Length: 476
Image (cartoon, rainbow, N blue to C red; front, side):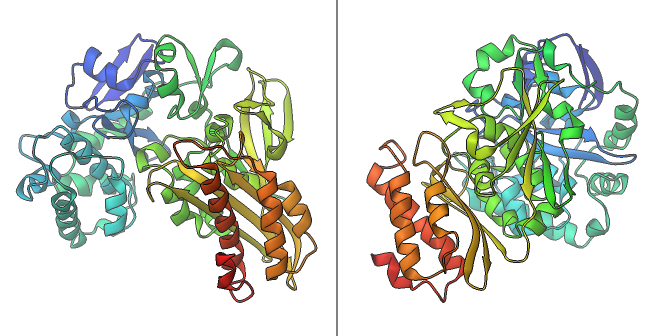
C-alpha cells in the first residue's frame, strides 16, 4: 500500500511499486494534464513536482519526470500535477505564458509551468540563466523558445520587487509569498502538516526485493515492462545514504546522492569549485534530480560522466549486502563490458575520495554532439598533484575509448615524478593512445575518438599550466 498526497488530497493505492507514476496519475487518478511524450525523460511533458519533508518546517520540491518515477517511491510525499496548480483564475505563470504567447498547441505547456514553479519554490536567486536551466528538461515543438524565455523573464522581473530573496527555499515563508503572488494555491500552506502526520516509509529490507533501483533514469527505460510488475528496493529511501560528509581527510558520498545534490553540495564546491558549472553539462535538471551517483557507476556505461570523474580521483567503493561490507577501488571494479565485481544482493553504499590538498588539481572534460544534455562521445578526468613543477601523483581516466571506463595506469605511471613540459606531455599522449581501444559507432569513428581523447588530455595540462604547454602542440 502506497500512501501519499496528490495535489490537495491524501490517498492510498494498492499498486505494484514499479508502476510508473505517470500511468498511476492518468489511469488510476484520472488526472490528464500530465502528458506521455517520449517516455524516456527527454521531453518533460509528464513533469510533476515531488515534495518531501526534510526538516521541522521545510519541504523540498523537485521537478521530476513522472514517466521514470516508480509509484512505490511516492510514500509519504507530495505529488503536484498541473491540476494541483490550477485556481479559479490563471496563476501568474499561466497568465504570463498566455500574454507572452508562450503556448500554442498546449501539449508541452503543463510541463513548463510545473518546472518553472519548482524553480521558484527552490531557488535562492532569481537568476535568468538559472531560470532557463530550470526548464532545460522541457521540449516545445511548435511555440519557439523566445516567447517562453520572455515569459520567464517577465515573471522574474515582477518577483524581483518583492521580498523573494529574503525567504528560504521550501520554508513556510516562501510558500506564503508564492501564494500571495498568485503562483501557488492556498492549500500548500497545509501540506507540511499533512506530510508530518503521514506514516513515513520505512527502511526497505534488502533481501526481500528482487530489483534494486537508484534514480531509475536508466532501468525505467531499459526494463520498463519488468519493472512494472516487481517490488523494488528503493535506494532513495535510505536517507543515511543521501549524505555527503568529510572524515579524516576523506569525502564520503552516499550512493543515493543525486547528480544535482552533488553539483550543488557546498562540500563538493570546495573540493572541485568548477563542478557546479561543469556538471550542468550532464543531463537536464529533472534527470539530475533523480539520477544517483551510485547508479551511474553500477550502470557500467563506458562513458558514464560521474564514473569517469571519480575514476580519475581513484575512488574507493563501499558495498554492503545488509550484513557484510567490503571495499574495492573503482579502477578494479569493471571486469568487461557491463560486467563488474558486484554480487546481485549488494548495494553501493558509499563512494570515498581523498580530499585534494592545495597542490592538487582536478579537471573534467567531455565532448558530445550537443553541448548540453547529451551523452559524451569521449570524456576524461584528471586528478594531479604537482609540487615545484614535478608531478608527485596523477590519476587520469577516459570514457568512450574502451568497453569500460578506463584508468590510464601506464600513462599515470609514466608521468609520475616527471616535470610538466612539452616533451613529457607528448610522450604521455602516445602512451595513452596505446592504452585505449575505441570502436567506431554512432558517436564517432575510432580515429575521431582517439583524436578527441588526445586533445582532451592536452586540455587538462593547458588548464593546469598554460604557460608551460605551448599551444602549437595541438598541431602535432
